[in-house]
Each structure stands twice: as structure tokens, then as C-alpha cells.
Length: 541
Image (tube, rainbow, N blue to C red):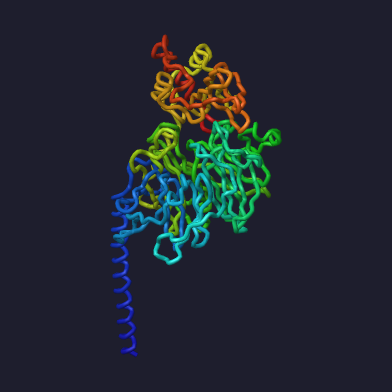
């Protein structure tokens, strides 16, 4: 018995020693991982949870050149796409846990295609949305490089206009492919569209041979996702008839309000947004955090990336929306900030290990074209217990000055002639609702003094010359193959037949004249700006 006890004691001692050794090893591994993460954290990014905003050290392989999309591929490998056409996988070559190499998978330019703006894997096949078609690529010999390329679907109208994009590729529960064709309402020479497909969600059969228009009235809706219950959602941008940055729940046959002149049969049956988004501008990619991934208490939440305001190249953000179903098609929703000061994002996707990967588009050139040199990055948000979240105090603009006096100045200076303040009117200039979160005091003053510097998308000055010898200057409200609707100074709409147009040109000038603060002293300017900063969306106070 004593001998048996001695043997048992020895075995227990060995197990304790092995356990201690493993714990020490695990502690070393964790310490090294923590050090690696901290070395690559972008300290400029503000985070509102226990997240480390890691900027991946991708130094070799394909140059990151305005990344547009990111998706999870076979075996959990992450793939990203450049605006310039390259699609590449992210590889960890030194074994430190962070991807450092971009391996070329394919290049859509080799198929004479432009702008890969969305993509998703269907098994081993990568579907890529481009301006002209949805292309399918496959790696048949498992070397990490696509060796097969074919058209999956191209039965939709397009031109090579800068705004003709294909967004939001998503596979449905029935294996159908859902895709968004952005609006053609700002294309001064749009492609014929008898079936009114642009500005719509298409549902394409699994073999790519048939489709149906599933919903319509979308603007620049970049992101679309099914949740784990099979419900479909998409984000859309403010502008045209869209009053808000918004998240929408998709119901088949619904009309979401944009480009009403193209869809007059729906104008009395507009589906309102599920959420009026308030923690960012220009929502782009979206993705659901899996229900089994805690990620600092956000399991099941929808994460949204934001491109940020026009021309503000250091601005962008991420938020999340908690969506709880309370009826057949009814939800309780609440939005929370996740991160900001992370500039010009394009897409995001959760990785197989539970981290959030984010594609940063970066700076572009005029006309939404790729930057003159490689630009952009891939971030990986990693849950990190040692991170102290940033303060939420500075998210909302601080309003100082006399807003009542500012309101009078706004009226006396006839600012309300060109700018609405509640999203309820379409005037010559942009609606100012929410400008208190969009611009700082200094930026508002600069935009008034020098309006040509940053012109909001959709409010470019357009010059149109007609066969009748007339020249019009205004902003394009809508366009079609039959007519162009311009908003002229004085908020007068002019309808011009496309057949009468000799030339049309987007000018690099604002419709707003400079120097409108002339004659105001500093106190009055401060009051005017304070009033403008107080114009926030309901719920943002």
C-alpha cells in the first residue's frame, strides 16, 4: 500500500509539474502575443470597447491600393480586393499571429473588368461584383492562386460612369445570390434600364441563369447581410430622397424611397429605415458578429463601417446595432459606437478566430478614382482585456454661442434659401441636419469661406449645353435615358430632354459663392456656427 501511495504521489507530482510548465508556456505565449499586438496598435484610432485596433503590418506582396472589400475564404483565410483590380489573400509568414503578406489571388483587370467593389466565397468559388458583371474565380489546384475565371452573371445595365458600382454580394439561405446595383440617378448618360434594375436588389439563381428584382429604391447601398435567422438587412447613404444615413430591413417588393421619379408607382408606399444611423457618415460594409462570438459582449450584433464625410480624409468610424426581433417583421434596435478616427473605411468582416477585419480605403482622387500611388490598409480589431476604452464624451459636438441669435442670422443671410435643416426639402444645397457631428466649428467656417474645397457628393455644379443654344448651371437631381432634372439657383427645377443635350460636364466648383460671412463680426459668426452645430438628428443630442 505504501508503495502504491508513493507511485500515485509521483504521478501527481509529475502532473503538477507538467501543468505548471504548460501554464508558464501559455503565459509566455500570451505575453508575446500581447507584445505583438501592442506593437501594431494604431493609437490614433478611438475605441469604445476592449479592442486593440491593430494595423496589419502588410509590407510584402500585393501593394494595398484603395482596398474596397474584404471577405472570409476557405479554411478561414481572409481575402481583400483593391480598387485597382487585384484580389489577394492575407498570410502570416513569420508566425507571429498577424498577417504580413498579401498573396495575389487574381486580378479582374485581366478580364477587362473595373472596380471590384464586393465579393463573397461560395465554397471554393469567389464571386466578385464589378462595374460590368459578377465574375467567378476558382483555385482548382489549391496553390492559393485562381486558375479559372468565368462570367457568373451580367444581365444588368451599366456604363463606365464613375458611380456605376456593384455592391453587397450576399448568399441567401437558399443559395441564391443577392446583389445591389447602385442608383443611376446621377449618371448624366445612363444605360437603358427598361426593367428598372439600377437602384435595386437583385436575387440571382444559384446557377446565375435567372434573376428577379427583389426590392428597389436604393441609393449607394454598399453593405448587405443575412443574420443567422435568415433576415436580410442593408445599409444606405444619405442623399437624393434619402434623408438619413440608414439601416434597412429587406422585405420582398419594398421600395426604400430613393429616385422616386424613376419609380413613380411606389412613391405612396415608401418603406422607412429600420435605424437612422447616428455614429458615422456614409455607411459602407456591414457584417453580423456570430452569436457564439462574445467579442466584448457584442454577440449577434451587426457591425457597420463608415466611409466618413466627403473630403475629410482623416474621418471614418465603426458602430454596431443590436437587433432584437419582437414580432414577425418588427424589431427593437439600438446603435452603439465602436470606433472612430479610423479614416475612410470600405468594408468589414469577422474572421474565423472571432476578430473583426476592416478594410481602409484611404484617400482617392477626383471622380472616385484610385489614388495616384498605393493607399490604404487592413485593420484587425482584436478583443483585448488590457485595453482601456476611450471616453465617449467627445463624440457629440459641443455647442457654444447664442443659437437663437444664430438662427436669426441664418435667416437674414438667406441660408435657408439653399439649405433645409430637417431633411424634409430638396433644395440647391445640402441639407444641414446633423452638420454638428459632421464638421467642427473651424471646418464649418472654412466650408462657407471656401466652398470649392470640399463639395458634397451629389452637389457638384453641372454645366449642360443644349441644341437650342442654352447653357444651364445647377446640380443634377436625377437623370435617365430620356431626361435630366437640374436644380437651378432659386430652387427651380429644369427638365431637359436628353436628346437636346449637346454636352454635360461636372465642374470642380461649388454652387455656393464664397465670402458669405462678410460683414459679420467674430461673435456673430460664432452664433451662426453654434446654431448650425445644434442641427442634429433626433436622438443625437
